[in-house]
Amino acid sequence: MKKTLLLLSALFLLQNTWSQGLLDELEKADSTALEKPKREKVYDTFAGTRLINMHTTESYPRNSFVFIIQHRFGRVNGGFFEFFGLDAASMRFGFEYGILDDLTVGFGRSTYLKTWDGFVKYKILSQTKGKRQIPLSLSVMASAAIDGRKSLYSDGRPTTFTQRMSYAYQLLIARKFTNWLSIQLTPSLVHYNMVATKADKNLLFLMGGGARFRITPAFSITGEYHFRIGDNPNGISRNSAGIGFEINTGGHVFQITVTNSQPMYDSGYLRQTTGDIMKGDIHLGFNITRAWGFGKNRAKKRAELEKRLL
Image 1 (cartoon, rainbow, N blue to C red):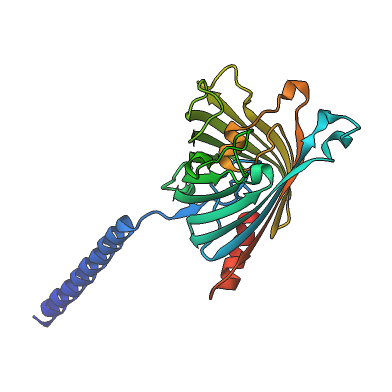
Image 2 (image 1 turned 120 degrees about the vertical axis):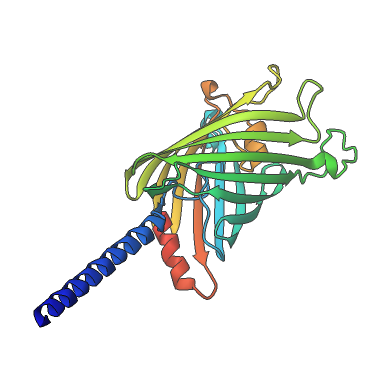
């Protein structure tokens, strides 16, 4: 009788232990199934917020301050008398601030037509890798520019504030395909309140694109092109194009550029480019970008800035 009771007790304990172990395994499996696969953000699609003239999908962390100097010399085909464009130049000083990690505002002043410009850019999607990938980065950008000349008319007639305004709206779609290749498509709408002739459209659609070819961790080649759709065929405007050579030092991004566009603000290079590449109407220039992190997590922001730029 005692042997029978001992046997029954042992079987009961074994069954209870086995059942508890099975329940633990089931709970573990359920919790694992509920866990979302991790996403890893893709960095360094582009080195900075500009490719050559156009915006990229890149944005700096919250409380980051960015200073940009953009410079374009005169046309190379001006010859020796103009010292191949070095005697004439246009500049733009730009300032950008990261209100949020994905929300950036900025403004700038150009010597070209004495133009003031400002923009807002918001990053909707960030490319990720892992089990649950987001295949691309997506940003939207809206900008406005004010022609600061005393008069827009050759005879000096008064000019209203609204006549001076122009606007640009862009959708920035980018993907980093490999460590050495990133491509961006940039459909744009540009509106000028006042145009040169009746044949010129106030609102114009353009399709742009650009690419970055990374040669080494510090050196890249960039290029961009913007095609005007339905513009006045007899006008003086040309499609904006350019190539660049980019050097990334971590805190700075230095770009040497060759482009047929002298304006550097959005509505300017998209619709006021007059250089004919086939005739040698190209401008040498450069962009210099410097970023700083501020706030309580300054060290963390600085590390993230350097991670984005390296």
